[in-house]
Image 1 (spheres, rainbow, N blue to C red):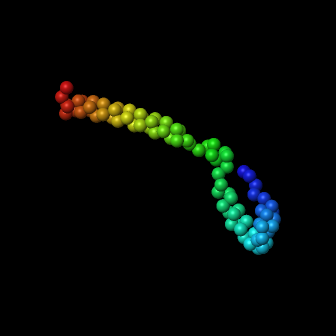
Image 2 (cartoon, helix red, strand yellow):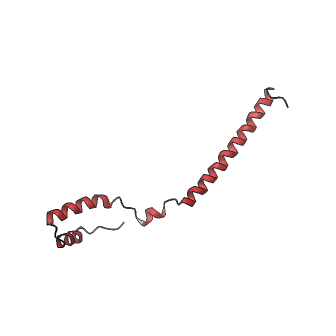
Image 3 (cartoon, helix red, strand yellow):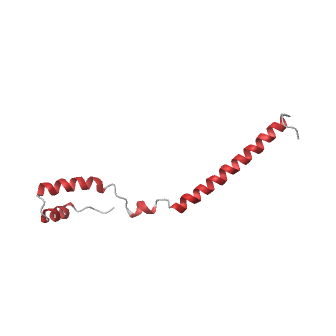
Length: 86
């Protein structure tokens, strides 16, 4: 994770006309949000649209296979109970 140089930020802000008190307050607010920024590692671990499409296809195939199996099982049970003549 990158380090936020508060001293350098304070120097830059005071050099641009902020008072030291204003600069420190702005840095404190910015530092709170700085930790929420995504790093390169965070982004590398994220799924892409292609990853999500592939996952959706695999789930669709598996659910379809389960429904097909369940339908076959239901037919077998109905035949065994003689509720569905062959």
